[in-house]
Every structure is written in structure tokens, then in C-alpha cells.
Image (cartoon, rainbow, N blue to C red):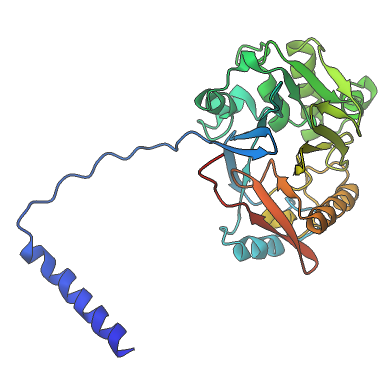
Length: 329
């Protein structure tokens, strides 16, 4: 303690004397950059190269019903435990590009150019970050969609409503396609969010893509080494994937959880955007028990960038352990 106090006193004296000892006038500070660097990150799964391409993030006030079966104070306590600010939620968006060696595959497409404009660049960054990563949209062979929420499908179109990936086959879950393209389901949609989702999906898939999509089934590969896995609850046809190459695997979980500080640590919590909250919880526990038991890496669309992690059991919930940044591929 004496040594620490002496150092502290000496440091304080030096700071006090410094202005008197300086022989040079202070220089003006360099102008601040004012923006973040391009957001992409690469890693390997066997011989496959995965590029996580950030679509940005959104931060908004914590609503009372953000978690439908937990009190706002409980949610705030979980945020504080994770060193996040109270009364505020940040959601990240992380589409993927997979180079299998023979195919260039995109999984989900982010919020799209409209969100980029309305958020002043906070969201909808997928297109610009793709370009920064050196990926030409015309070179993409396949776009695989996990489910039909706007933050996953809106990037299928350019700002003028044209296909953003003009040479790609667009693959969609058959169950998801059937639900959102059903006129009867659309007529029964509740006013507000659900009604808006139906209208947006018709805009993207009917007006934009002219229904030029290929429905796919669960339990089959949708691209080389990319297995489609049923993970329903968040939406009726919500799909995740297992990417395998050699002995290596990663589980691409789509929206099995949203922000992991909330929904991995509290798997029983149901978000307002889960169409079937109880089923989403069943799916979440099943997937996360498997990930923890198999020590399989997980790639989370809504995890903090770049979204690669491992999962371990932690009491009644799970702890996500971010993978260390790798300076090589």
C-alpha cells in the first residue's frame, strides 16, 4: 500500500508540474473519423470460407412488452448483469456469405436499402459491407432465406426494387413460403406488425422477385455441406443450418435467440416478435442443449458482431462464449 500511495503522489505531482515544464505549444487535435470501419470477418469451417458481413445494428428504448413473459425490471437486471445500459436494447444483424469452393452462397440479406436511409446508415449496411469485402453481388450463386422477417429478406431488393443478386437462385423454406403467401392467412393477420409483415413479404417476393424462388425442405442440403434444420417457433417455417466440411461444423442458428445476453441467459423468455413463444422456447432449449453437449460452434445472426461463439450450460440458462478474433483465416 505504501508503494502504491507513493507512486500515486508522485504521479499527481508530475501531472501538476507538467504545464510548467512544457516547452512546446499544444497542437490541434486531428479531426475525428466519424464513422466505423467496414464490418466483415472471415473464418474457416473445414475447407469452406465463411464471411460474416455486418448489416449494422439498431438501438431502441426497452418497451414494457419486449419480453412478453418477464417484467421490465427483470430484463433491466439481465442487461446490467451483461454490462449493457438499462432501458435500452441493441439488436445486431449478421448475414453470411459462404464460399464452398464451388458455390458462393448468401444466407439472409439484412434490412435493405430503405432501412439504411431511414436509420442514417445504422442498419442496412449489408450491400456496402459486401462491396468492402470484395464480394460481387453478381457472382452470388445462391441466396438462402431462413425466414420472412424484414431484417432477413429486405436486402433481396435494391433501392429501386430490382433483385439485388441478379444471377442467384433464391431458396426459401417451403413451410414459410406457404404461410406468408397464403391469402387466407393474410386476411386473418392482426392489424399492426403482422399485417405489415404480410404486406412487406408480398412487396419483396411478388412485386420484386415475381415469385421466382425455389422452396426447400428441412433435413436436406440446400447448398454443398449446408443442411437445413427445422427450428420453428419464431415463425412457422423458421430454419437454421449446419455447415459441415470435413470433420468441422458450425450451427447457423438464425433467430433461435435474439440478443444472447437476454435470451441465451434466459431461454424461457419470449420476445414479442416470436409468433409462437412457447414453441420458440422449446426449440431454443433443444438447440442450446445440443450445442452445449456437442461443443459445436454457433453463428448467431443477432449476436454482437461477428457473432461466432460457443455455448455452455449455466444454471437454468446458457452462457455464450465469443470466439476470439483470429487475425488469420
